[in-house]
Amino acid sequence: MDQRSPNDLLRSIFNHVVLPHRIPNGEDDDSVISQELARRSIQAAQSIRDYADGQDFFEWERLSLGLKTSQVLNAEGYLNKARLLNELRELQSGRAVILHVSNQNAGILVYRPAWFVTAKLT
Image 1 (tube, rainbow, N blue to C red):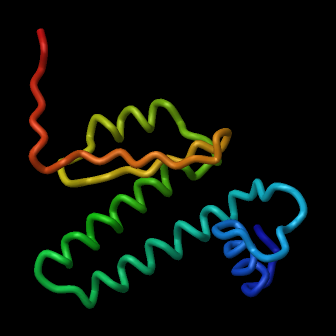
Image 2: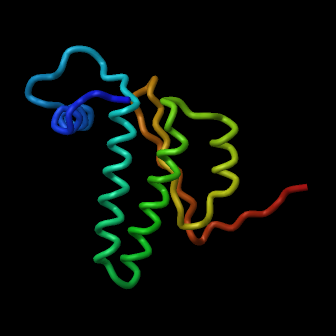
């Protein structure tokens, strides 16, 4: 369990997301920060969704679901191949998955458009 105060955790999240005026020493390889950032992003998307109406409601709901899926896929600090392949197979149209590739400090957005048609090749 992380022993940081809520203010220290928020400061760590801020430092993780943006380049502050004074860059902290070292790399923050901290899964607690990543999980807290994911939790706050999901909470923000759900809060906005609750005030949205019409098509906007569904867009915010899709974002929230995509963030939840991404949180699970990236939970251990690396991508689990079996879990990732399963999620990509099950990816519904209009949904997205966000992957974090820590070695490259990169994110990958995988989106399946609503108009996408699949066919089995034999």
